[in-house]
Image 1 (spheres, rainbow, N blue to C red):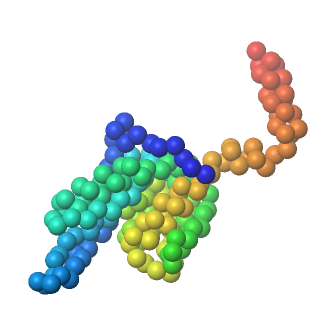
Image 2 (image 1 turned 180 degrees about the horizontal axis):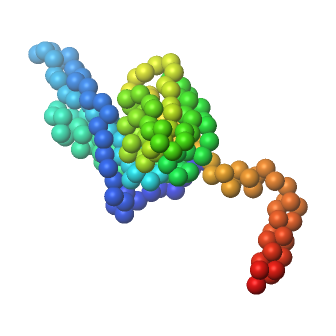
Length: 180
């Protein structure tokens, strides 16, 4: 189930730094330090991406992460301010459970998952990360779950028999003729 690539230059993307880590490489003369950054980007209306960058300085690592995140954008369906249905997803040792919430609930989720929902445009949601709380895996699990969300109309088409679909289409055309 491969999605077509989303062009980031056409979108107004907002970015958020989720995690910055100082990493060290031990060499003959001592330790060499660099920084890794985890960044999520989104257009606040159903498109989100994640990227990881590594550089000697923090701003360079963040810039690299943003560039990678723009190349890895995924879209998902929104139902007003929440998601269409409940979903569970596992990535590595991290499992996330995401439930839709009524309007006005807000984002009830921990750190990395909250950052993803904020830039993705989800305003009312309840999510729980189970297992490992590694920020990299938490973000990947959240985006993996969002990318597997389905539009309710497409699920309804899959569940109904072709004869039922034809019958409903005939009823709609008859009702339209009665109205006009």
